[in-house]
Image (cartoon, rainbow, N blue to C red):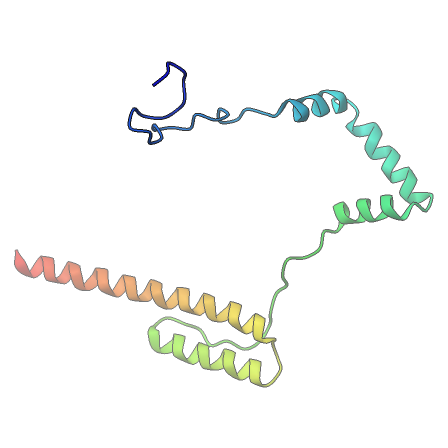
Length: 141
C-alpha cells in the first residue's frame, strides 16, 4: 500500500475491527451542546413549566408528554384457560380466536396474544425434546 493507514488488508479487504470512531466517542457538536446546557437543566425545566402554565401549547405538550407518555400498548382482559401442556395451548388459541370473532379483542391484540401462546408452545416443545434426549442418553449407559 502507500503507507497510509487505510483499515484494509494488503488484498484490499477490510481489516478486523472498526477503523471509524472509537466506541463511546461523542460528536464534537454533541459535546458542545452538553457543555452549554450543563447546570441549566433545572432552570430550563422550570421555564418550560412556566410557559406551559401561561398557555404556551408547545410547552404544555412537551410537559404532558413527559408526565404521561403515550402508552405503547394496553392490557387485554378476556377469559383464557390455564395452560400447562400443548393441548391447553390449543384450547387457549381457540379461546383467542373466539374472542376476536366475538369482538371482545381486536385482531391486533389477538395476534399479540397468539404470539405469547406460540412462545409457550415452543417452550413446552423444547422441554419435551430435552427430556427425551436425557432419557435416550441415560438408556445408553
